[in-house]
Image (cartoon, rainbow, N blue to C red; front, side, top):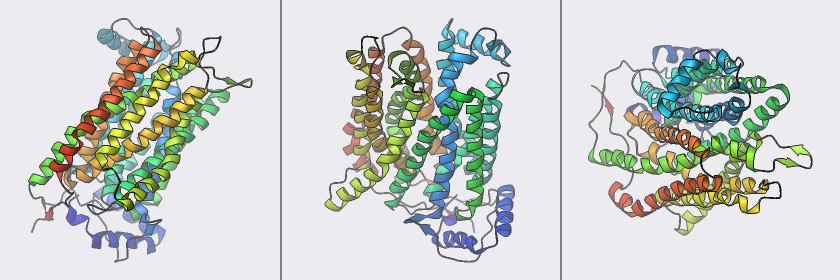
Length: 496
């Protein structure tokens, strides 16, 4: 979508849909999704709520429900496979599992069910975070972002419900990753289209987006984990499916507040990339290793960490056995609570002229995460007579590491969204997501290594990876500031 389709006048026109009858709005949304054309209603002011375009809240709310469904699934997946699904006499019923196991063993040698589970999680998350690159490219070039988000949400819903049956386990994973590619590859690019270049509210918008993502990550393990504990794994997966359906309804009802897509078949003249834009793209790739390092460390908290909790932490409090997935809820609650604090902190620093730049924020975030991971490495030093570490250690880890995450994840997303040229924004945001994909593959390999090394060595290595990423960006920050310069708007215009 070129800047000619992102002008103030066009956004004001789009906001005017709020005055139309609901049936007319729904009809227009349907026409846009099927034909990839934008229906422009009468002019009106851009509707805002709490200082941001309403579209920001629509997109954030959709992602909230996506993450409720996703993190509910993630919190249970490895535990479900190791403790239930991958047991002799049961795994044989999974469609395609024999061929899948042979493939894993051809790559990694003979592996245990626990290793199959961690490798499967790594592959699943790697593909899930790779496919937004394809989904964003499709939204850039071929289909409307609205159509892609709707199709992706429906596909993910089907995948969650397919998890209710052993036989369709691998099919369910394939539905989930393909749907996520379409949905996530086309949500974030719409946020950037709501703001001008240089608008500092864009950084706040990605903090808000991060806050609701993490709120979903907090709610999901509590809801799905509790349901799974008392009603079984399949019921827990069903909760995730209903969450995705709610997200789709929220998106469709609020679609009138979103920026329109240009007709994909319309001939549009796009000026060649300027030297400034070329530098921006090179800058994005220069920061990619930082994302890779951070997410390689973070991916262990979704993968191996659950097994470590189960085997090395005292999970009983006052006679109550705390479900392992509940610890994942802290990984959502802490950053969601931190976002308002971070926004206020940076605004206070901005008034005093001391606000750090994006690169410093990202570097500090990685270093904080690395230092926090040292708590896990040192847990055996505080173990009780039973050899189990006290529960407060992982709790403190979540509180500390997510303070670092608040400095890194939304800031890196802001950097990519602000610097990516409009015609490649979805694709380049997919490149950023590709770092999570690569990190997930590494997490699967590290998961196999976890079985042959001690937990302290494993967590020390994880901390070193995050720390190296932080030092990399901190050393490059001065060079990157001078080289990239200020942001610019896109020069694309319609063909005459």
